[in-house]
Length: 627
Picture (cartoon, rainbow, N blue to C red):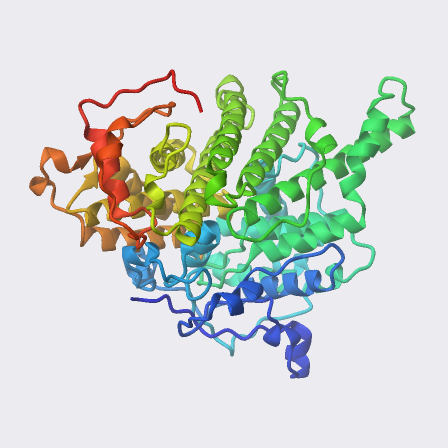
């Protein structure tokens, strides 16, 4: 089995570098980089270090987050040449085979990326695969003690801040306002992220200096006992978007940065702002000018808390790491979703803020539903379906948003992508819960053949996952404004990578049945997605480029294994014809499932029956059967 290889990295803060002493970041169990050689630690040894828990006010929060920022600020020696920028060339670094993503019965949950059961924490697995290795020059010297004005001229600062305001701020659902520049950490963070839009020749010299200055200013600000809202916003920005040098600088774990930002926000009691704002809003219309200013400030702080929590959920979901922040019921009720917003930017952004919060809240709730034993399958089936139906109700509200209003239409459209990615995660979670529970408690019975409520959950949910996967890719490709698409948060590209990987694994498993493959547009969607990711990438170290490289490696592996189209018979074609409805599969009772065949996440017997169902001329949908 092949493995991913990463360069050996020494993490050391600026102070320890200057003093030439050992840094606590070098020996921290909470900071992780890609290993130089693959290792195979046991689940017990690695689970604790792979998923540390955070507690508000914990002394680890700030230290860990700086380790992440220090890693991202590492600069490679020089810009890659044109050949190194090509996806096919970069994809060779991954050395990954499709079968590496199909866990066996003995695959450990934690360990080397090519050996772990990626289904345990799918988003974390894709994040790590997207994080490509880089070369570093230890002799590279960058000036320190600079100010933002020493690196950029005032017109350049204004230009970069305007770029951030128009292309990135809407992702944060922030209210439009005057553009301010105070030479603060917030300005520096915004300029650092927006510097990716500079021409490569200028960016290669400017971006490393901006990142180093960000690192130094960050050290002063993050240890400030009187943390400012600007510092928290800066950390939020740096957790959602990785700075780009265009030289292959290393990635970092945004979950550590956002956890520190949340901890700082909780120290300022931002989690209680909904109570304060609600109290002031109750008197709206009778407020003095001072009280109105207090209400405006409270709403500003509450919106920041909301998007901090949303961003932490976005970065932690599907990674096995529970978020530190939790939205209260009052937080979720602050924005009324029962009536459509006024057609202005402020109202639409507040509406998106509320609906995004509910989307991730529902997804997190569904991912907490566990199948405790084989005897609880009926309850588990009902609970998961209830979560899915709740999300579909939310989808009714968000789907028309980009059509009926032109305010931030692109960002509303991307909500549909996030919705389908979250729904795919729920389906993925539900299937894995059934698989692992049956393999643990009833290994004599194939997990994919179990029935409840007159349904076979593996079939009932399996096709829904494929539909969600294809919808994620279709939505991504349907965007016409490629400039805005290239500014998407890093985690959006991870969601795209997860959806594409789901299709890859499905196709490969079908191939293992005996030259069977999905028919339809899935493979075209994958190829177009790879091309689009490459097209919009700002640099080789942009998350879009990294995701494209990884998916190209998977596509190359699949192309070596897929059956030739001319060799397929009509019975070898899997058609997606099952609608998402309540249906019985009565003829599956005669299918003989081989015992103890748990080598694949989507086992061959499961897919044999799945293909048979899809191709059966006698297949009928009975909507009278309830769940």
